[in-house]
Image (tube, rainbow, N blue to C red; front, side, top):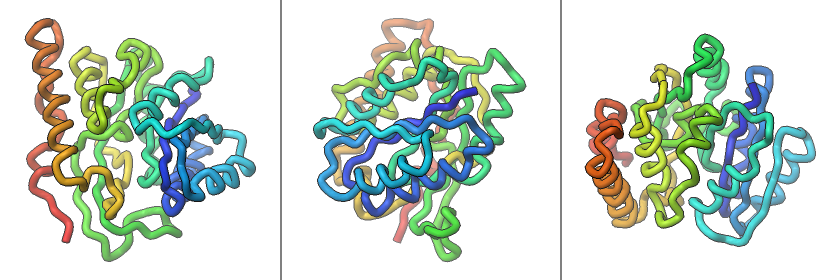
Length: 250
């Protein structure tokens, strides 16, 4: 099954190479199509991607003027190949663990009606750039978080949910996942670690008040949708919000 992985990039010269290499090491386990959307980077991100693109045909780079991560994700959705059956995401500063696709794609092989796998994520503060894994002295926690990279989505589910809401500056992923689970997809929740979420000073989610405000706006929209349409599913028991809220680095 063709798996398209969408990666938005904006000024991630120091990270995007590692993110891409973490995907490329899984080429024997998945029929990969890696869609990189450069959102107007002003550093050397494009050069890093182009060098890897020259080495492998499964990377496709598209460039656009800076418009924010939500528009970049939607641009990626527009570049899905006709033969794409499954869709996932990886942010350009994160790492896809070795074996991640092998384990979760087996779920789709076992159940042709499956629409979504939603796995766990590990938050770490240091990555070993050679092993593309958490460094021996890193702090970490593994949770069922709120992250697009935790999901592998059947193409039909993606088409049913539609585009990311470009009204969001952040938390567009939270809004999208809430809409996904509200729609009552056929899903499983493996214990696979689907990504190493790299905590660093450049994380958007370390900005003071914007992430919380946008997150609460996504939750409020979900409440309004479910109030106006009782057929939508309640979002309970999916995300480890208590573990996420209680964890701090340094």
